[in-house]
Length: 234
Image (tube, rainbow, N blue to C red; front, side, top):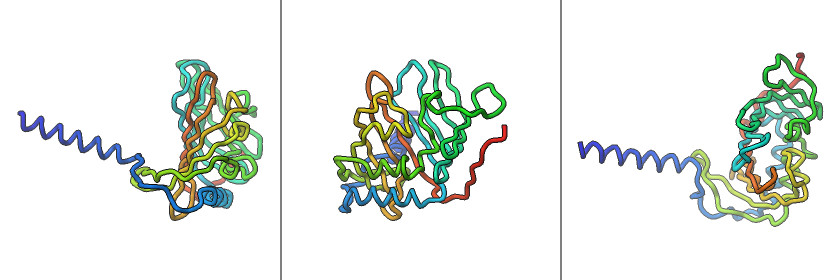
């Protein structure tokens, strides 16, 4: 029995190590490339894409009030999105299906049968269609940072990515992720594919809600997959 328990403990240790390797900072020192040039290239790649899938996850969020927990969906240029936004009102979670096309937003609220036109500000999150907008979206954030520095490479899901840190004006971030204090600075960390230059992860930390700092991590993948977004019919 003791020998069996020892084997189980060893297997648990191996499993823990493998799980930790899925997302870690053991990728080594940062890239020698100019960090702002890397961000500019990532922005150009995003602007030229025909579609990209976004997944957003929040961390250290307030335990009360209405908060955006996360979102996932497909964005198509110049400014369209089809997906869902996960919110929490107090202890009650809900998912709002959203379609955004060129500034017009439709949402299917919980316990309703169809989509209705709505203003993003009424739901306490930014217009997700602007995520891929070259004039207001993620690529603008890539170009608009200060204190831009290279960081250690990071390993995500078995692949090693270059990282760049920058500081963003909250008023720009507020366009795509509503922030309680738009005058505040937001810390950004960008994970970039070393071969394609694609942005694969953006980590944004700032006062998105009152009473501290929160973090939203934006994952990007499935660049240029076939996608069409149209206005809902009901």
